[in-house]
Figure (cartoon, rainbow, N blue to C red):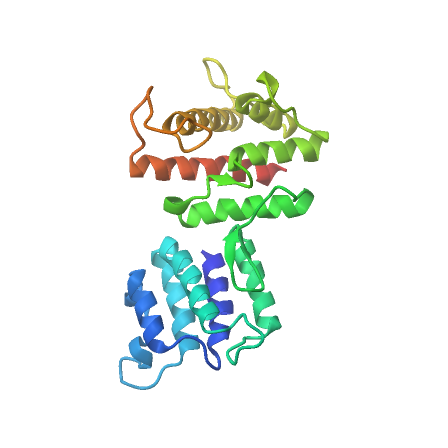
Length: 274
């Protein structure tokens, strides 16, 4: 999980002079159950010697990348909140970190589908006004974010556009110039089928998988995408109706994580070919 290691390295630079206290770091690490990876609780190593916050932050994110990526992403968001409260993003405050550090922090979060404002506010990246390479990078950021933390997966991005639907439409815009909207032609299965065709991938069969295992895998991806879309709609986590599902059982937490990972898998497969 190199994204987390990079994020930790950049965040640690905010602690080279001041920043939140050792006690605040202790509480944040404990809250996200990452204390076992802390080399210096309270600012002291196991021998009682002083250990700086820069090293603590870097080491904790390396530990999170190896053992609990979801907790690492949540910790990064909490540290940004602590930095914001400490004045790191406010030019008129003594704890202001400086434009250079803030600018360097933007890219690691962007690669995880999050936008860091100059004020320190951290929000999911909105895709509505993006296009081309910038949109491709943002969609890949959502894939990374889901893979890091499927329990907090951003299944809906922009104004109700889901990741796979947004990716399929992006593929069609890049390859054909537009995508159909509304009616049967604008439905998710048809949009996904058109995107697969535009990428030279094979859509799912009615009965039998292709004898070529490469094409068979592509067909299974297509079937997975359409099935997950149906499940989300019925269970109410996609464009479905509010309230409990009527045609199937409610999603369990394990199934919800599976749906999130399946969404990321399909989107990543299309973006890799694009």
